[in-house]
Length: 78
Image 1 (cartoon, rainbow, N blue to C red):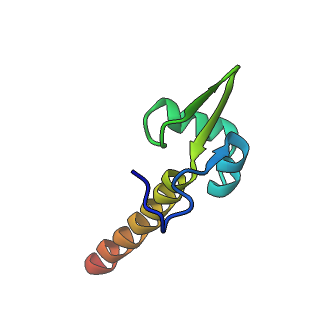
Image 2: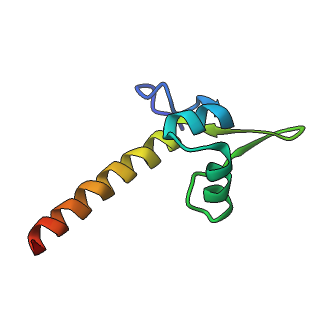
């Protein structure tokens, strides 16, 4: 199930850590979660959630790639 070469796949990060990783506030991250624009949380019980670190890192990478794609499109029309 897990790739032994990817140590982050089974690592969970807290809401605060995910917010810090993305440079978003907790409130903004929760709004993104509510609209399905951020990876789903893992329910740990008693009002505690965490996120799969590799999913958060993938989300960040996709945001970076989208920025590059948008810049290329902009440059083509300039």
